[in-house]
Image (cartoon, rainbow, N blue to C red; front, side, top):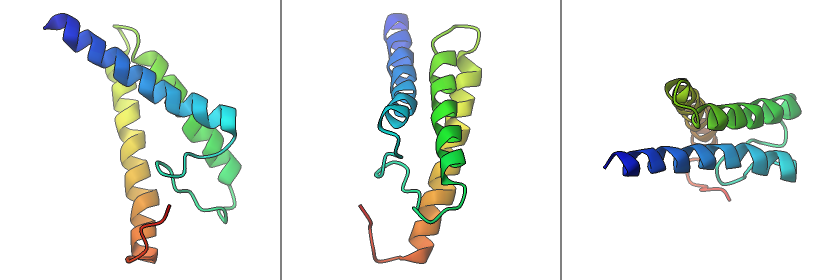
Length: 99
């Protein structure tokens, strides 16, 4: 059971790490996951911030001493994203599901 627990941690860490890497490689937000509007003034700063934090959180979850901190970073960022970005889209257009 302990081996299964560790493998799940590594899969989650690689998934979070992949979010950041995919965004850096493509140069765009993942539209379905991060529907950030094109009209935001500091879009590039937000892009670099979220991509960097995803990479840092994914890497820190790979090590035993920093796994809790990395998971907390990922949890906070995912909460901020789902609350601010998705909630603003729901309030702005309640009947339009978007992309």
